[in-house]
Image (cartoon, rainbow, N blue to C red):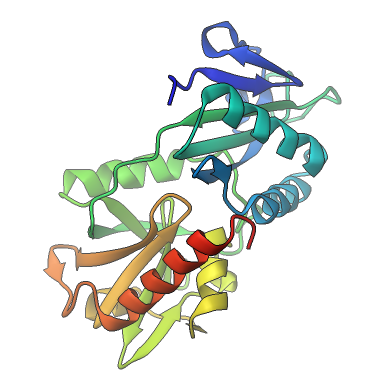
Length: 277
């Protein structure tokens, strides 16, 4: 694979050193933007349709103009070819474009970028840490994959300082919500459970697929249920199904447990079977 330094920006391929975003871009000034991260496997982007559907939903909530899905999909294909990607990840970002210095967005064209990078090198198991800050399940951006990731940056740094690889949020009700870039599943008494979208978690694409291929109950759970679970795992577009080994330094009873293994096996089979499930 060649070095991944070619991206697509506002209608054309461009080398990364030559790419320029206005210093007045509303995404830079206010976090006014949405994005998607996709996995590329065997030179094919995975679950493009689902990701672009979610991009459009997020943009609609933010009243942000979103380019047609066909245009973004064509851009994705161009970036994959231009960078010779066999295994990697792509990020599609849409921002409010050049605007004012305040919260009000101008009526100009949005900024649209498709960029490529290597897959993260995740460990086989995850150690996670719960954080004191809460997700607002009633907020204007609840469930939106927004570029406003400042909370995630702070929470993940806190988790890293405590020797964990992912931070886990509760919501305002004190219930288990999500990680900074992942959804959470727990196994309790032979049942596989995950927080419902009403808890404020992101509607993760891998989460959605796991719900379709194994038996899962969507149920509100107190944050403490994670550390008390028999087993647990994280899901994301780059992690797939990643077993959780410990919570706040407390080892779970099994890692990976039988429910985790079943989900991981089923997802791997799905990944091998179809690039557009």
